[in-house]
Structure formats: C-alpha cells, structure tokens
Image (cartoon, rainbow, N blue to C red; front, side, top):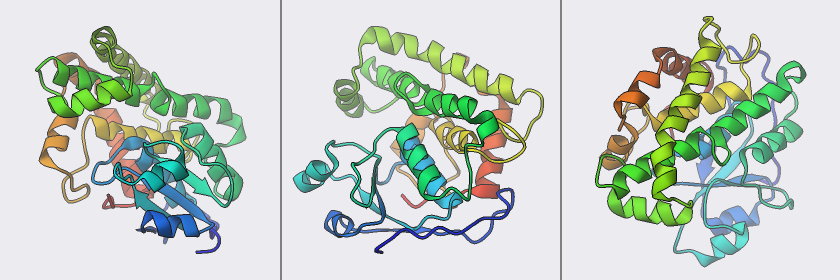
Length: 268
C-alpha cells in the first residue's frame, strides 16, 4: 500500500461499505509509506480501538502491527514500547489521542469528525477520555490498585508491570475510583436530555471515544470481542460506586455507535 485511500462517506448515520485493515509484521509496516499503527494485540485497548474507529469511519486503508515487547527494532522505530503508535508517510510517529485525531482530520477531511461549531468541546471530550488523568488512565489505575491490594482488578503481576509503567502510587490508586465516577457522571449528564450524539446531530470523534472507552467497564460480547477470560473479568470489575455511576444510557450509546458506525467484530 503505497498511499492511503480516502473515500467520501455521504451519511455518517448509515453504516456503509468501509475500508478495513490487515495485520502485518513490523518489517512490512516499516517498508510501507501509508497509514500504519502499532496496536496492543489480544486486548481491546480503548486508545487503539478509538483510533481504529476513526480510521474506519473515515474509510482509511491501513496496516496494523501488534506491539512486540521482544522486538527491539519495533521499539526503535516507534520511539516507545507502547501502543497505539501511528505512522503516516515519513512524518514522526504519533502517540497521543489528539495528535492521531488531528492527523485523520488532515488526511481525510471529507468525513469531518470535529465540526467547527463544537470543535473545542469535542477535543476537550477526547482528552477527557484518553489523555493522562482522563477516564482511561483513571480506570487503569483503579484496576491496578485492586490488583496491588489483593482485591479484584488486574492480576497482581499485570498490576505490578502497569504500576511501574504508569506512575502508580497507593494514593493515586485510592483516588482513581472517585475520578472515574466523576467522569462517568459528566458523560451521563451530557446524555440526560436523550440526545443521540454527545455533540450536535451527527457522529463525531466524541462518540467514537466514548464508545470505545466504555469497554473498560462493560466489554462487548464475546462474539463481537473475543478476549482472554482474565482480561474480561478484570474489565468487568466494578465496585458499587462505579456500578452506580455507569448509567445505562452510556452503554446504550456505546451499543448504538458500534451498531451504526464501527466495525464488528473487533479484530484484535
């Protein structure tokens, strides 16, 4: 694939034929000049799934390569040993959600997921989901804390690895639940008027990020998202306060966005 193909999508509210992707080796991805992304394999990491969603809705052809901790060449190419990492032509690799969103807006402008009227709010929402301190980070800390404390959450070995990688401390872990619940409350309040989309009257990047990050609380069914039982069990771990904050409207929105706009089943 020497370039990335973009096709205009007339109606974002109707799921039509969209471009998919294929997995290739790191060496194959490095040889290409189009859109490529390093992704976490076997786990529906919402950061990567959200980027996949952007690519899918914008009808972008791309190659995926799975994150390989035992492959120094991949880490050297990406500059980090994490995922997602997005590559476009000979530009520097991108790791942050807003960087990836901006890239897709630039290379596939015909399908606009950040309409000007709501651009500031949409970008703030994406950051609230995916940036450090956002929903994804706080939920990860919540599950790490459970594993570190011998309670429900990630497996202790997984928790220890993530704790060292993402700056965990018992104090941060203890406060993560309240932050998760606050952000879920903000999302619920936005949908409280019965709206179909978070902003405006059509799909935006905010809807894609909301849908994918809800998977950290209620994963998609096994036939739509095949994953290891231990990972599914960890993601489904909810204390009473978090369970109460998980408004059914959030899951209804997630299910509708996947049904109407995103690719199923997930290809992990």
